Length: 209
Image (tube, rainbow, N blue to C red; front, side, top):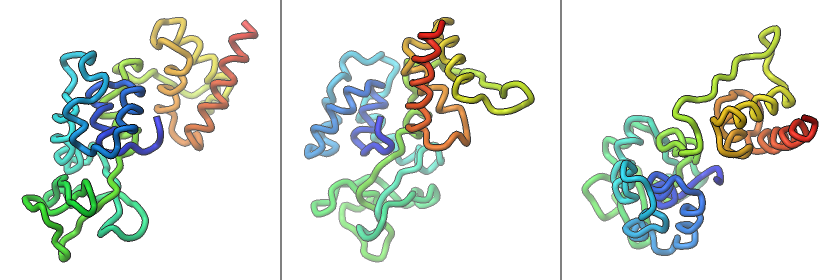
């Protein structure tokens, strides 16, 4: 998935755990939060998943608890940045005619010029995956200790770990295994570029066996 998701995309991920359902919601962006009442793929989702609307209603509390960090543009001016968790004591997600979905003063449908509010709201896909993990990942992260001499694994060693995890039935595909392993390796540079290099190593190691 892309690095940041809109609020509707985040809620559809929570309800379906399917990237294609998130893509379908992207195409319905103009419908706003109303599209959450009938998102594509929700009918096939496991019964234990929240509905997209339930996920939407839960976001305030998740942000207040620091489990998810929502990003937005404060007062509609400047660059996007994280909304502080403690600000959510007075915030709620509301729709305002000019700005669309905003995080604004709880209990009001009008923007208070003297209060803090944010628009252009997004959530990191990494945050969404932590709260609502993909069914293709195991519930427990794959243990990844350091290599010989307590040194970090290089790409070839990581690729071998990916292949081993697939053979052991922990993941359904090299892509899923690569993504999961990248999620639990801190300090390895840009995740997308690293994942691409690692995927190339997986193919090379697989051909060499």
